[in-house]
Image (tube, rainbow over the protein chains, first blue to last red):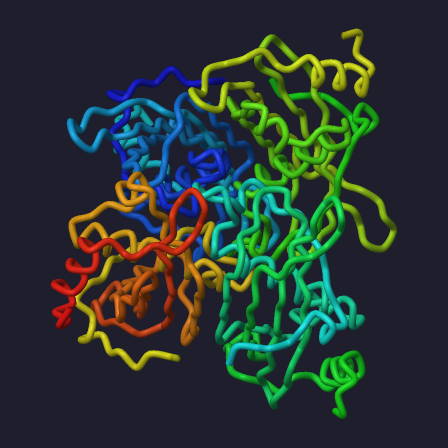
Length: 151
Length: 151
Length: 151
Length: 151
């Protein structure tokens, strides 16, 4: 289930700086915080496609996480610049996934080192009863166009 | 505005253990996490009075925080046992406050050291429009009885 | 990699109440918070074996997470009582895992419903250079005794 | 103690988008998260002055929070753009403060609405024994220059 995607396989990334709050007593980013970084990345990815998660919610849908996974290769520390690559790999009827690859950017030479990989499986549900609903066509098309999938 | 309340002035406390997630790169509890501990204490305080915050929400009210304050005396660290004393000091028409005094319990001799003081001012609001509403009488009475205020 | 362990396969659990801070705009526990609950459970598990993670750190070791995984079956909400079952399934030279099964306890009839499953793979490392080190024998023995593994 | 500073009194601000993780069951930013936003702002403020908090720590100092305060005027919600104005108001021998004023930026007309005010008092301490130390001259001068104080 672990992805072998390389940086060049991703068409989208977003960056952030590690906050002090996100570190723990080992002086590294707490392992659970990467799931927040994944959330930031998929929010930005959806914006990049021209949509807004708030509008999707207003149209009666939630995207709930059905599974999440993270593999830790190397730690990040306070104020590190990290880059989160993300892409949708598949879209089924009501579920789809996001792959993530996080790198740390060296402040001096701008080189990047892979530090984390992960994925989340999301399910599109009705926001009143949490029952699965078909992923809206506009989102399906936008992903296929952006990722250049055959749709 | 800083309280001079002593431990003996509090009729209620709750305890918890510091989680690894709550520490930061200085190996101490992150300053913002004490506001979560305050929340835990006031939730338990309301339960102690015989009510449940969920039921209060279901009856159309939210208690929103209007002001929060924390004074840090000494740090807490991972797995420390901390005791959060709390009490309501006043209840106006729609606003009331909680005072907090946090101590650290020594694991060996059970002695306690004061580490944090704080307060939060809450406002009772309608949960549809966030407009102030009068604090329900049942809560007002319960606080007055518990704290032995003249009501 | 997903575990089929049932409640009866676990010899240890710990309980906690969901904090308001742990919920999100969907009025359910944020998906990343379950990794904090996993941390609480493995800290208590190690205590149950008679050890203290702080002492392990003082002896020059860190247990760093190499992989984490969570499968979400049903949501938890504010003030829900959740029970986190956990066990060590294997111990290699320097790495070992924890399995988790989380249930929600009904406040009235005390029945429990499975809501989350997960695991974390941990690596025992030197706390100065983060290089893998052999898991201490005292911990290995304690786990084997507690879980009644053949060692 | 509450500041009357207006937007025009601040020479520095930084912006961020509210993350889903930062919201709670009331669909607004959890009250304790603003202290994280304050941290982000003062980190960026110090960078703006030409310094890096990591380098300050490497030189043997910590800036620990002695008091924090937040007044909530209006809520922020998921994906809102918020702007955090900050400035140092005073520097004593070892302690100094930051004032904060947070506004929400309307996505359409870019108008801004004040939503939160706050302050933190920090103390410069030795990072081995947490004893107060004089604030370094380079930082004192940089603040005085930036804020155009008489020094």
